[in-house]
Image (cartoon, rainbow, N blue to C red):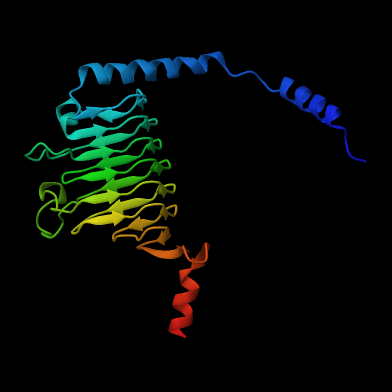
Length: 230
């Protein structure tokens, strides 16, 4: 027998009434994060620091490189995010650009010497690593830490992309473009560009699904490759 609407409303009210209240101490880190965001905006010479930006107080951003960092409106950086510019290039163009509404998950790292650009509403899960360069290791007689960095390339991540937990993008040689509305699977390592409306996964990451605009359906690229191989 169906439960009357009035009864369902009452049950819902009772269940919500028994939920534990939020810990009042949870407001302390929120207030510190708010104060940190205001302090960064007021005292750090960012190339741009938009409105409604939230940067957790545990994030690492060196003051001497923030003139190469542009943060658009409504961006959120969670706990322990690291924005790094190890070599500051000449010119006025920013090296790290985080587009409006993007959210960078906790412990994620963005390190750039060329340019890494996140478009609008990009979502990074925790522990995502994005770098537009790498360490040189070609001379086996010299410690790697003394061999400097590769020249790398630019990384462009277009709007509405989603990066899964512990995924990586490494531009060791060439430019990489992750086109709009694409998904990078958890623990994947991306070393090449991704078309729009696709899912990439694996090491190295390959396109495993793509959205077909004509049919309005997601197509399995792995099945298609297997069929051609057979």
